[in-house]
Length: 173
Image (cartoon, rainbow, N blue to C red; front, side, top):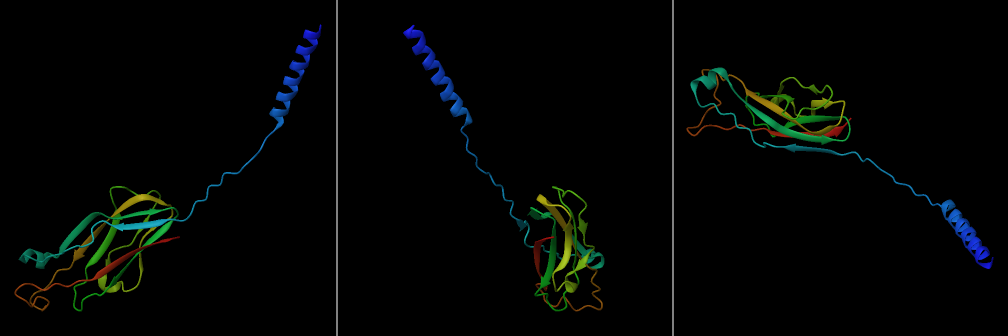
C-alpha cells in the first residue's frame, strides 16, 4: 500500500510539475526594417563617335550602348542626366534611353532624344513607378550630319575631338 501511495504521489508531482512548465512562456519581437536603397552603375563609361568616312559626315554617326546603365532601387525612382564641360562648337549629340536586356517591371517613362548641348541641368531621363532589381538600360548616342562645306569643326590633320561630360543620377520618387 505504501508503494501505491508513493507511486501515486510521484505521478501527481510529475503531472503538476509538467502542468506548471506548460504554462510558462516568454515573448520577443523580430523587426524587419526596409531602408531606402538606390544604386546606379555606368557599365560603359566612354562612347566614341567617329566621323571617319564621307558617309559618316553625310549621314551622321551613332552608337548604341546595350546595358550601359544598371540600377537597383527599393522604391520608385527617376534617373536624370546632365551634361557639363561641353566643348564650344560641339555638334549636338543626342542620347535616347530604352529598355536593356534585364527589363524593368511596370511602365517606365523614357525621355525622347536629349541633346547634350541642351541638358546643362539635371533632366529626367528614365522614370519608374516601381522599384528595380538591377534593371539594365541601353542608350543610343547619335551625332548629326556635318556639312563640311560650311562647317569648320575639323581643323587639324590628326582630327579634332569634342567632348561633353555626362552625369547620371538616381533619386527616389
